[in-house]
Length: 230
Image (spheres, rainbow, N blue to C red):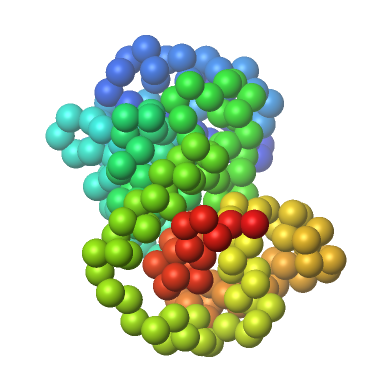
């Protein structure tokens, strides 16, 4: 295992399959600015290792024996001051857990068949505080929100986003569609720093932790609806 350099993104890999852990470790340690500082065999181990090693990002498998990835994610992100970001690894047959993991505090999702470049990019994206939702996963996520919203009546939209200005509501919608700050800035023809200010205000007004929670909120309030993405 390589030793982290100054400023390296420290990664902990949690997966019950040794080949997956070792494979991701080799791939990520070969990337500049990223160092794998440890491996965990299940959720409980991930919680313990995270406390010991203080990683910036935890690559978390959803399904593991004992304490699973969703519960471990919930524990790791429960503290409002927690800085660790959880990047959930999923496969097509596990996508039904995506919504639950998002609610638990995951910062993003990546399919297990991602390339080395996609894996490294994903780690960098969530490490800097952006949300990451793979397009395939996003489609399933929207479908799940649709199913849940049909089963449970929701309060009027304005009760939950009424504190936002028209422009902040627009930015929240674009966040839910998966756009980065740079992409939002280009869409709205404003400076990227201006978008960052809007995002900060949105999170503060709605008492949300990060962009991923903001995306969840947009779906849950009905601000973004299945089939409504542009």
